[in-house]
Image (cartoon, rainbow, N blue to C red):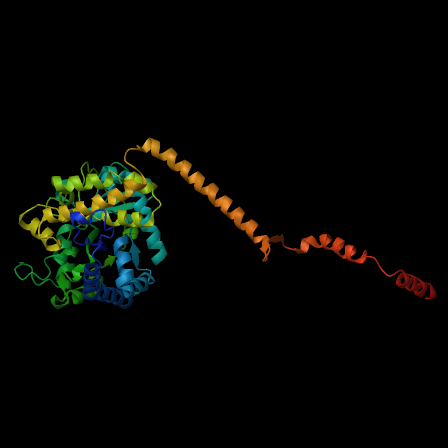
Length: 477
């Protein structure tokens, strides 16, 4: 018996507007809202929404035997909530089937795992809280930004309590080994690894509508036959790709949705099942340890991190950004926190890539800039303004060892001020004002104080005759 594990990535960054040097210090809003709205709305209607409809139909028509996993970045969820709320509703409908698993990742789709371990943990926690809030699931399996992974990251992921992680089945790491098994991390043996089958995944994601491809056209029965013909001991095929493969990279006219709908029927004929990542980890045991001493990813031909850190422009931008990480985490300014998240998106550094040939064409296709240098200049202008705002709250002249006790003192003072404010408010509530001044409120508990006032009124000089008459009347009675 074999199983297919489908995983889709959904991510959209907050794109930066054209930000000039002269805007530094004058304009603190950095984003191109029009581009964000236009791009995510277009992709959602061409891809995400019809793909959700297709998957829901596949689940219902196959008795919930078809299963799938998603990772959705926090920045993508924010944009979808704002611009395409109907997608969130359709994703909740998918989640309600019990056949969809949501994976963990960094909230901002960032490079924090490579640069700032504390920020990495904070972002994973923020992302998982967002997933639980929206879809009611606590992610159990981790996937990092663009499947970036190495032994150090494995240790951090295991320390956060995840049972498994997914990454790329890069040839320079696997060597002669097959990606069609479960492995375990060399640095954290309890962490199980699921590896992308690059050839079969890319057959769908990139070659499906390529008429020059020798296997064109790709049909569902042909694809399932390829999986069925794999060696019997290779029980697992991980198909990992971007969600916009369905309808955007491979347009509806290519027949991609019909291809997907037909997969479960042909899979059933060969006794091939569909499992979520958590099901895979619970049913299959690791066959070997996998050591990854240097970071790898699923991007570009090299399958490393050079797409984001391959030149001096990228390295300088990333270094500058994360140099203020600790100060931002100490900050309580909501706007600074948001900007910090949005500026960490790996896309900003991806646009600065100076690669050529096929990798370069991919980078230029996604970039909104005319060149990597324009991307670097625009980002650094924005980052300069952002750093100035952070430094206004936490000056660079004060090092972190001095800053922490100062902040503790400030926060203690804020707590004391808040306590005194509540006491003043309570006192105000116990005082009533009239036109001449302040007088105590006559509370129910103050009734004994009213009696002397009544006795004082009765002790005024009275008519003696009246008193005698009253006494005589009593005696007569």
